Image (tube, rainbow, N blue to C red):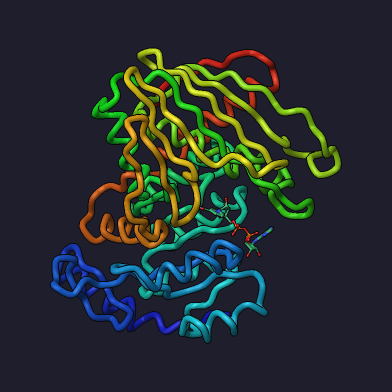
Length: 372
Ligand code: NAD
């Protein structure tokens, strides 16, 4: 699937390294610095051409300032001609999951964006890191703490950067709610209630434990968990959780149908969260502080969050394309050699807490957490 014209490219890359110390090699082999007036667009390879890549990420890449869709990785050959035509992708930049490591010889690819089922993120991240690429992984980062740690180690060993797709951290209304919380505009935080639920069909990988790692908690409940941590800027000390009763034992034979959980934070903040695959009525959060309340509903749509404050003001900043914004931010981190605000360690923290939520729901006992 992949042909090589390596020696010339390697020569250009090595010469560039020698000449500039910290260079970037463009798709044409030319070298530019990040500070050049025309920013170089980093080449992204999308791994997994499913719903998110097709519906959101590829279109969003067309809106970015510092990124471009350079390559695809797919296990479905029938998708290749469609993607090649639509996004002008050359033959040399088409891979499958078994040829990913050959990206090492392709300087047209800077960043590998992993958009496969949750339990494949580590495998694809590690292959990308071994090929010397930066990695952007979709959420949840993986399905276990150990696999997240392996991802972090692999990218670190390759001296590359790793970021996790927490698009809401780039949403202006989420950022505004974080400001209201952290500047204590309504006083000390007391409670946060956050929920995200959605209906799901029976035959997708999301209800298979081996691929999803868990049910709605891993998929959409993670947004409610992220909200509590992102808005408060605090790490939970203890979780206590309860699975919802199962109404469809066939569909939910491997993963939970729903789960509700509470978290205690330093300073007395308590949060109540829930998630379910059996309803689609919850998609927002509400923060209660000493002198008022604020929150977003809807909070987790791709491009249209909005909310209210108890003093009557709206929270309705103009929407951004969250995917384009997060990819541009990661590209700038790479171009300017600065850390991502959403590094692998941030994805790991959520996975660690989700594992504690499952443990608490299983044992019906609170689980203490050690902040990392
Ligand atoms: P999807 O099912 O639409 O696509 C998954 C892709 O992975 C498909 O192209 C499929 O062919 C491929 N794949 C490779 N190996 C596979 C295997 N063994 N089994 C099944 N599929 C396999 O899923 P999606 O909605 O695109 O989700 C992909 C990832 O993106 C997930 O981790 C999900 O949590 C995440 N996601 C994030 C957001 C967000 O808003 N950030 C939204 C949707 C999905």
